[in-house]
Amino acid sequence: MKDVVKIFDTTLRDGEQSPGASMNTEEKIQIAKQLEKLGVDIIEAGFAAASPGDFEAIRKISEVVSKSTVCSLARALEKDIKAAGEAIAPAAKKRIHTFIATSPIHMKYKLRMEPEEVIKKAVAAVEYAKTFVDDVEFSCEDAGRSEMSFLKEIIDAVIAAGAKTINIPDTVGYRFPHEMGEMIKELKEFIGERAIISVHCHNDLGLAVANSLYSVLNGARQVECTINGLGERAGNAALEEIVMAIKTRKDIFGKIDTNINTKEIYPTSRLVAAITGIEPQPNKAIVGKNAFAHESGIHQDGVLKHQETYEIMRAEDIGLDRNAIVLGKHSGRHAFKNKAEELGFNLSDEELNKAFERFKILADKKKEITDDDIRVLITNELSSAPEVYKLKKLQINDCSEGVPSAAVTIEFEGKEITDAGIGDGTIDAIFKTIDRISGYKGTLNDYQVTAVSKGKDALAKVVVKVVFDENKPAVIGHGLSIDTMIASAKAYVSALNSYISMKDMLRTKKGSGEDI
Image: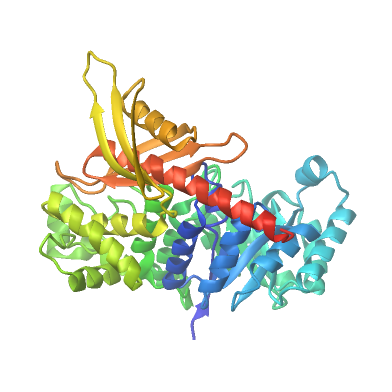
C-alpha cells in the first residue's frame, strides 16, 4: 500500500497572483482540464469573492472537472465563504479553503485583532463553510512566523469546528527546511489522525521545494504548489520538482507517493507557459528547456553510452518526446488529431476543425512543424476570447528615415474596416490604428516575443498585456505568425477581444441580480 501525498495545485489562484499572469475564463478552464489529466487531487480554481471573473471561472471549472476536487479560497468572512460555496456548487467534489493570519506581526498590524478574536473568527468561518461543503480546509496564514502554542490552540478549535485539512503556510518563505520539518513533526504529534496536515511554501529564499519535502518526511500529507513554480514575489513550490523528487528518491521516501501522472508534467508546463506568457528559466529543474540538454562532450558521450551516467530521470517520464519533428503540409486531419491527442489535447469536432485550418495555413509557410508549434497553435485557438474584432490585413512602412506607419483592416460585425496611422515605432503605429478602428484606447503594459521553434521560419509567439480601463487589471493577448508584426497585431486584437468579453460577462452578472 502506498502512502499518498495529496497534490493541491494553486496555479489558477496563487499562480495567477504572479505579476502579469492573469488568465481569462476559457484559459483557466483549459488549464483546469489539463490539471485533472495530470492527476492533481485538489484544484484551487480561484478566489470567488475577488471578482465576477474569478467567480465565473470557478463555477465553469466546477461544471467540467469531475475527478479532481474543485476548491475556492475564502477569507474568514461570511461574504467570501458564501461566494466560494456558490461558485463550487456544481462540482462533483468540492472544498472551501478559508484562512486567517496567526503570526503576531500579522495579527497586530494587519488584522488589528487580539488572539482570542482571531480564534473566534476562524471557528465561525469553518462552521459557516460547513453549511456549504463537508470538506473544509483551514489555513494559518504566516504560520512560519507564528508561535507554536497559538498554532496549537487555533488548530484545536478549527478541527473541533469541522476542518478536515490544516494548512501550515510559510507565507513569506522565511523558514529553513529543518525548521519546517521540526514544526510539522510537532504538529503531527499534536493533531494525530484528526486532520490532514498540508504545507504551502513560498520561494523567497529559494527553499520552497526543500521545505515542502522536509514537511512530507515529517508527516505532511498534502502539498500546495503550482506549475512551473508560479506565484507572487519569488513564486511557490514547483509541483513538478516535488513530484519528481518523491518519485526519483524512493530510497528516502519509501512508500510515500503521489497520484500524479508524471507523463503529463511537461505538457502541463508548456500549456501554462503558453497561456500566461511566463516561460520557465532555461535551467529550471524538470521542465526548463535545458533540463535534459547536454552540451559538454564528456556528458554527451556518457549519456549515449548509458543514460543514467548523467541523467537521474528519463525525459520520457515527464512526457518530453525527444523526437520533436512531426507534421507537414501534406498531413491530414486524422494525423493532426492523433498528434493533438499525443500532446494532451482532447478536441471537439469544432475545435479540431478550427485548429486544423490554422495548422494547414501554417504548414504552407513553414518547412517543418514541431510539437511546440502545434502545442502553441492549439492553445492559442482554445484560449482565445470570442472574436468581436478579427485582423484581416496588415501593411507596414518601417523605413529608417521616414515615419513608421501601419495600414490595418479589421473585420467587425461582418464588415471590413480599414484605417492607417503613424506611431513612434511600427508596433506603436499598429496598435494606435487598431485603437482608432475599434474605438477603444489601450495602454501597453508588457510586450514579449519568443520563437516557438528554431530556424528562420520559426513561429513567432507574441504576448501583450494591455490596459483598456485604468480601473481594471491588464488583459493578456496572444498572437502567432511567422511574421512578428502580424503576430503583434493579432495579440493586440486578442487582448481587445478578451477585454470586451470580460466587460460583457460583468454586465450579465450585474443584470442577473446574483449576489457575488
